[in-house]
Image 1 (tube, rainbow, N blue to C red):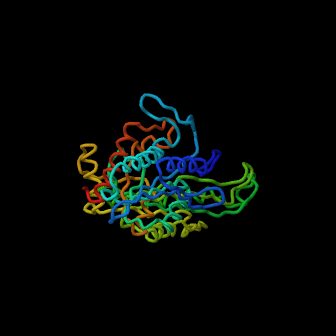
Image 2: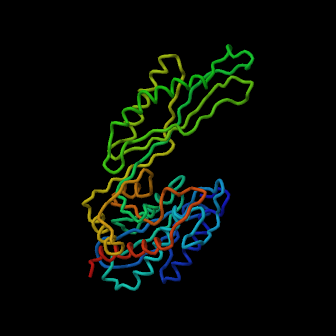
Image 3: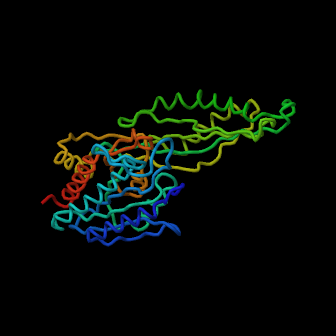
Length: 360
């Protein structure tokens, strides 16, 4: 994701150089003309092939957020510190720790630093085309070192109302598309949101829908001929995009009955939910690793945000999400990650690879 910064190409080169210093062979998976994923394989015992995946991109800086890393009081501050450079570094450190373990006492690990998670998810999709036979995955995101086994999916789309332009001094000669959006908003609140409040997931709570943007008009002296809203619909496991959109379409029948010309565009982004079973061997192994390193309980959590684990799971690769830092300060002016938590995350990941490799 390159929005005014160097993008992932520069970071990918640094990751590749570090992998080489560890004695691993960096594999460059070209995704577009300037960028690519960086992959490396640490061979281990027969059995499951475990992926360590973390994305290299960040959202752009905003407010007072800074692009450069600053070390202060045992923390690293800066855009992307917890989302998700902390996880990326932890995975690289886990590879270093695992090299001290005999190969027959750890599973094979495929490390993948991927592109574009924050925007177009091109990196993880490209990785899945050449994933070196992975059968399980840990996706690095700021979970506070908790074992996250579920998260919401999402579908994003736009709704447009149509009017006709006129001079603002004679508004009666036109049809104001901004005014026409009002009954649409009312219908969504009245007909869709109450049903979402009746759906419950034990780790994720209710699905949600939010109007996140609105635009309309071209000038103050022109009656607007079009108004557009953006919708972010978060899906619980068990919900599907088709049903979610059909509920919206049914709600739009009300405004149409009032003469409103309204169009629901096709989704421009879809992310499936994640719902790994509590008794899956990967979840049990992660619980064991966390007990050994963190003296933590076996509890699992769900996350309201999405991750690349969705795509891995949808491709038949069971996944959990794990990493240092808190999502509460991701994308914030004061984003940070605790160095000690990065170290502990690396130890948990290395322990996990040993457990899956036979725990000898």
